[in-house]
Length: 479
Ligand SMILES: Cc1cc2nc3c(=O)[nH]c(=O)nc-3n(C[C@H](O)[C@H](O)[C@H](O)COP(=O)(O)OP(=O)(O)OC[C@H]3O[C@@H](n4cnc5c(N)ncnc54)[C@H](O)[C@@H]3O)c2cc1C
Figure 1 (cartoon, rainbow, N blue to C red):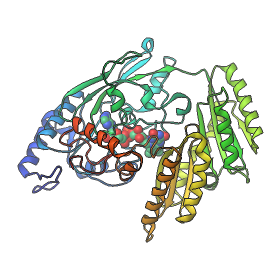
Figure 2: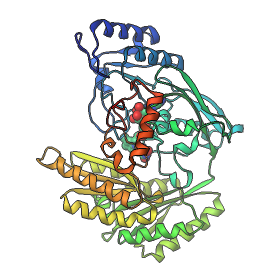
Figure 3: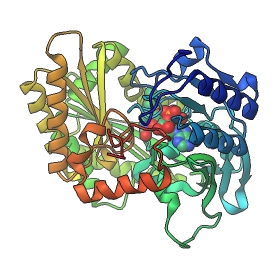
Figure 4: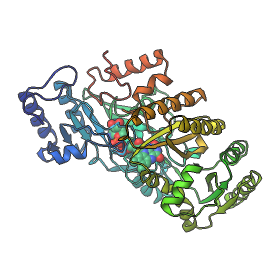
């Protein structure tokens, strides 16, 4: 941190006296040991999973909502940017302090405040890890279904800020569907409570729904009231291999017209199967052109019958091989291929662009065909896999940006991908959010009037543009 002129935020610089006043103010709020300007702390909070670097000037670890409010009041006074941060596992740069300022780490606010089986809900602080809540709920026969693949390390605050989705979204929905209410601190330090602890609530505008998925740009969550459901009695997994993506897509479409609602319906294309075979040494039929991983849950007797129906359906659609799990160990073995994709992709090329586009389920084959064309036109390796059950396909462009001209080819490919997605009636982000990396593409999906309303909402919450500035809109909303 420079002692002379600090970093500019909304058109003004900081003097050394102001820097001193901010540092002193932060220490008096949370204690000296909970504020850091040390290089190692700044560096550790300069990244998320995008691997873009943006260093903060302070990292602060509050313990409670009162401290969060006091930090935001101080930040308002000196116009300092504040960026809320959970585990920093975001895939669009949401927790990166691109204009410097304070990274507000919610990691110490990690208490499960209450778990109420009789009301089927939990009240938690934002720093609780997703899987910890589900493990606690399991002790009461309850279940917290949203399960992003990062469930063992991402925080519930980060999940709510992104409305994270997961593998079980086909049947159980996404984070948004489980948030009953929030306690949140506004950028000026005021504390608000939205929603309620009841199953129904239609009092006033639905601010809970507005704040869920707001990517840390409107308010900092300090408490979450989350809905729980009954834990399913049994789970079964089926892995089915198809000669091509169209056969697999037909099974997905046929499932829509049946009464079976899978918990999970994951898809892998030929290139992702090849990656996994090569790097995880998994044996898959040579003729495999697509793979579906289908999971169902419910009472024992029902899922046995459903599993047989699903197997029959896959056979009717020329499945080359079908494997059904009979135990947890067998289930884990079937998941091995799906779990191996992400690490395998990292070994193929130094740079990876992971896009989470969504199309109506019936349009998945069209999207896959267009991806093949984009890959050829721009001479890029594209691997796709993902949540076929809800049309959310993870499109991975694998490349080496150090090679001349690559950045331009990737940009052109991304532009085409988003254009095709929107043409097919889809959306450019199903679960990772807009953050920093998708901000340049926002106006491809949103019309100018809608965009203007969103910017006005941001201004109502954050007139000084101090909370997570530079995210979603890619410009200063004062412009
Ligand atoms: C290997 C891997 C797998 C993943 N799989 C999935 C997946 O299947 N589905 C999915 O949806 N995502 C997935 N993600 C992305 C990521 O894990 C999610 O977006 C997750 O919700 C981020 O949580 P976090 O605690 O890491 O938040 P962070 O990355 O720290 O922050 C994310 C955003 O939330 C804001 N924020 C954090 N806490 C608060 C708070 N208390 N109040 C207000 N705003 C806050 C931040 O400012 C930022 O904008 C994956 C990431 C990785 C690395």
